[in-house]
Image (cartoon, rainbow, N blue to C red; front, side):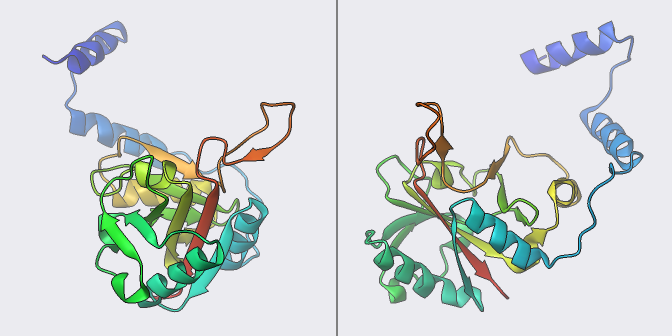
Length: 217
């Protein structure tokens, strides 16, 4: 028995519960969540993509829009040039097939290191209500790519924009039968107000978050 199994067995024993298989326990949790309706929320009377863009800009992210995934490399190249950043980046595996070389960017699909200037990722989904990116960790979606470089470029398909946090969690439960090791949320560049209560961007990296909204595949 592993340490994890030993701990869970002891917890179930203290709760006067019998042993349960992992799959049975997950189904019990899903049934419990499904049986409880969402709490009252403000009415959604806005377009999700427009609201997401507006809220992301409030968070000091920058936003571009393109018609298709094929247009993403040129859009990213223009952004890097405008910011006087090197045309060099690392990316998630899912974006490696884009024609970065034609846009003049040297992109490598691997987890980021602290020395990498730019990390390019997709997102699991985006939350319109707050302008937030929802990211799930995994072997093909390393969190370092969005957290270590000074510049994070996120490619977001408009079809993956949901109204609020509640919908984001529901999409994860529906699409991922097994929860990832970590789900984390990005709301603009890193910031802190620990020093004299003065907001400083990029305190823990990244300094910049640039979002490319994609209309279609």
